[in-house]
Length: 134
Image (cartoon, rainbow, N blue to C red; front, side, top):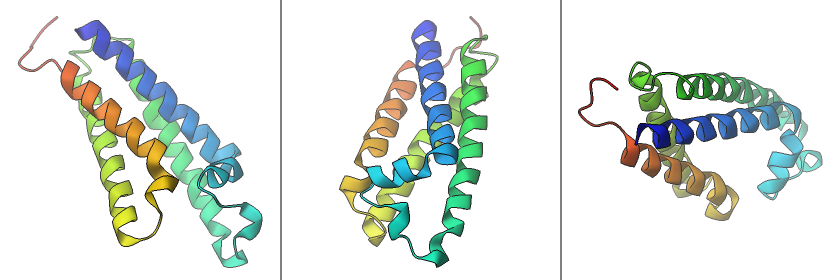
């Protein structure tokens, strides 16, 4: 059970880090996946690309630490598992809120929502409830 949790944490961390790299180096591709194009953005929105890069930095940092935690004693790094659970559910909540407010459509954020929801469920299912040692 702990081995499965380690694998899930490493995969989630790797995907998170890759998304961070994409936020920094391929923001146009991410916007394209949402049905937008960088060329179509008004000049006033260009600082948003800076924000995307800063979000990417945090994704990389979080992803790297999730990978590191997954390769070590999972019980001693349980706070990183809890961080991953919180990250996943807040990402889902933020996306759903954005859909409700009309900022985006569900089709634009469907894949990240589904991915984060699946990882949330897997992390909760394999979480070592009540375990104090390996």
